[in-house]
Image (tube, rainbow, N blue to C red; front, side):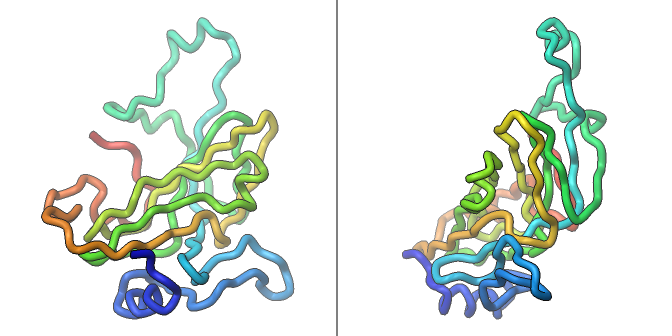
Length: 194
């Protein structure tokens, strides 16, 4: 069953989302923002101002066979540089890693899907987050891709993706039970692990 705003609010007040914004925010101090907060059927989470930006590569094809690769089994952190700011520029055909401002503590009888916001999608910016499984908790690491051939902007402290909550009948093995490798992510962007 898909949770509505009333049900999401009850779970959030019990600690599922922190900090929790009880309404959809579209403007701050007279300035329009990419919306965030509680909506009718979901919660628009915000992106924090800390990013891992991948260094630009080269268009020389032979370089790809001799340079380091992004490898999920052996992630090379030197491929990224840390960046903090209110605006992050994503290079063309590249991506950055960020994290949610909110910390989530998903109950055992809830499972979440996360989808990108249409405002960014219409600019060629794609947001990818795996499902937030039952009993997962932490700040969400978010992959943000720029599929366009020109640089793209994203705005910190504003909406980045919508979390959609589903109630389940209770899973046999939760993310916490299986000792998931991304359990309890703190206030830092977490690289790929195997």
